[in-house]
Length: 112
Length: 113
Picture 1 (cartoon, helix red, strand yellow):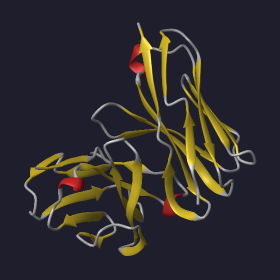
Picture 2 (cartoon, rainbow over the protein chains, first blue to last red; picture 1 turned 120 degrees about the vertical axis):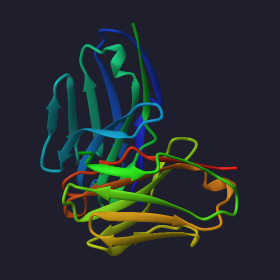
Picture 3 (cartoon, rainbow over the protein chains, first blue to last red; picture 1 turned 45 degrees about the vertical axis):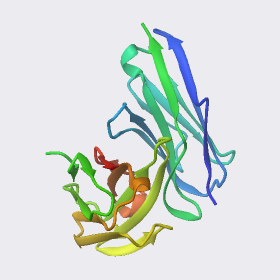
Picture 4 (tube, helix red, strand yellow; picture 1 turned 180 degrees about the vertical axis):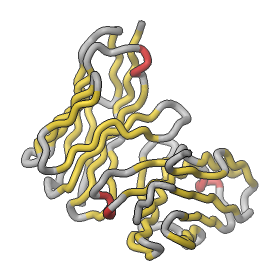
């Protein structure tokens, strides 16, 4: 059974820092991995989708990498801003389950 | 022109009532889902439909019944609501059963009193 773990559970940084959020998954037979952002009381916004054949994806200040064989992904946020404060969710599709499996998220707080 | 829209956004109801949540997507996706986000913010799949056919039915009480009249709509009906049903319910859709990534709606916050 696929399990997704995100470390750390919470992170507080001063504005301007570069930071890395980690995600690991137990079954490497995935089709893709998706990073989402969730603001308090809001829905999920897709940030980046990495297919299993890809190593990384970039969007603006965000860069996500995927090492499928080791079951790991990282989300790198450059020059963090207070507006980046949110919960970041990692989710994988494929493996033994035919649906998106989520981690419990990393709650990020960026202090001005 | 919201991609995945859910109604209502908030739902407060008494125990024992029956309620429905509606979901519509205009992305042309074949597959739609219902996820539940519990009080600890963990998201878990409930149901999935592909072209109106049920393909995933997780261990969910049979008081929950999804209905897909066409591939653009997936509704969730809940009978005899209980306090423990209070949560945020998210609808999502994807092309190719998830191979193209998921798009989520903004959620329905259900509170049972």
